[in-house]
Length: 627
Image 1 (cartoon, rainbow, N blue to C red):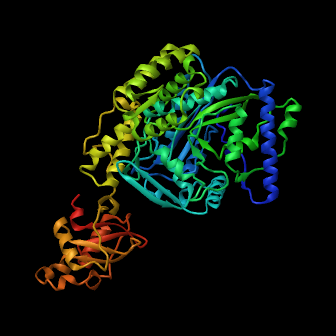
Image 2: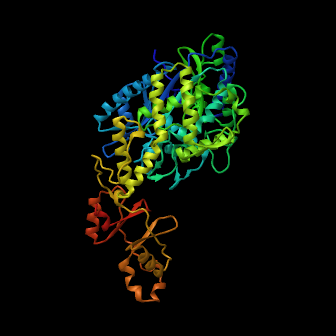
């Protein structure tokens, strides 16, 4: 019988919003009943203690021959026709759920083989539709244009979840992430979550010492993440080493400016303190802090099922757990009619290769199993805030992070090489993982520590590409090269940095977005001609859009309009509004360049403002067509 560690029960249930008082009362009744049932099972040793198991969920991106997102997930899923595959919220993403394996022997290489076999099956079918599959934390060629509600997978539960979160929040999502570049974005749906693709890792553990082991998972999260980062670029902007951490936190935040109910932290969270007490206390804390907003049909009473010697699935509890997203999440499941508990590691990104992903997983599991006796009951020895800042510093800076570890500051390289890698070897050997597997995959981690991880390769390569390409084309070229190197299967530490040409077999089909300038100088219609003359001379430009305070295009002023005022001091005091052209020919970002050229020739103009609706997005001039 095929079992599955994927617990996202919403995928298997028909969910609806909690709208009526009766719905809420019924849901809360079953939720509390599930908590009581879980307590009973723990007290009566009904939770499986052995064997320990591992499992994983692989999320991946679909792109077309231009290496842009391809919104055909449902069509491809139908053709794959395999229960291991399922949908994601974005219609250019899919998820693959791997079968759980006992933590021993060649389990990691066997998991790797299953992952490769399943992906190869999907790739062969995708190729017939001119679709390529890419493993990456955030697809480098994604644009804001790809994250509207029209890009949501046409499955009811995603619309229910989106509507429920929007109704709870009651205002748009204000996304602000600052790295080398800065992203400020006001968005009206949870679809930004669809930018993120991860390799979610599951480790089943014994209920004995489970809470202490969960706290250990929190303690090691920062150092583990630092060597695994792979998501530094979003919408062409260089942000955090693992931008997913910031983006997911803000894109599913049900809080607005004022805190709602008891939600003093985001549903996507690292937590605010160590866990103490029992396993059910972890679930009770989430229930107390986060209100439910979806439900499903419940027909069985979990406590009654236990009395009848049945193992309940705790559907209400799992449904609630599916709307709370800690980076290390406690999960309950039933496999082969046996209840089990596991930790789901959610912070590791997808890619850059399957070998890198399995190495990440082995490293995490090894450090989990190799916990030193001296760090037992870590919640009594370390300050949680040190652990939390370690995690967010790792997300920001990757391998450049300085960690506060066991009372002192230490570089990521020294901590990983001198302490955590040996700990991982020890933990893996202790549970009977084959030395051949351990040495092969942990060598990948060691090489990455001494060389480059995914985010470092992506950042350095992207910067090189920007030396000779505009942003949009550089994003495509980076994705094309990522795909080519990924298909060869060699770990990212062996990849050479891209040259500024980004030479590959790929050739972009140019649209205005490839050529337009985004960093443009604009003026207000109340600005003086004198100011315009000076800006044009200082910056060597001949066209300046005129915008209002909403960044809406209201006019255009050219050098030929103001040149005659160079020797007229009094005329320079006139404002832009008196000279600007208001009958303006514009294009949008995806206008073919041939069309843009024809417009310029037909209207005898030297520039075209690029707009989205009435908002100014950029400017393309005749000189930009020399590509």
